[in-house]
Length: 68
Image (cartoon, rainbow, N blue to C red; front, side, top):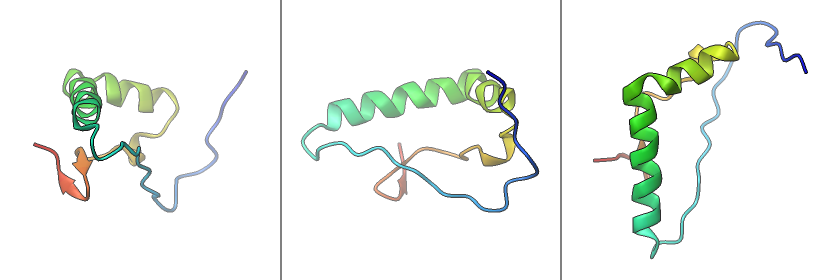
């Protein structure tokens, strides 16, 4: 299967993953895993593979605030 991006993205749509309020442990584990991907450079590598470098997140946010 061949995937191609045609042109530059002209907008950004942020997506989120919902967790039940009581599942803070799961939410935090997910955030930690994403943080590790970002820190290792793997996050950027995955996006670069598909030509999506311009859509990278600049951080991890929980309820609209930067995750600690």
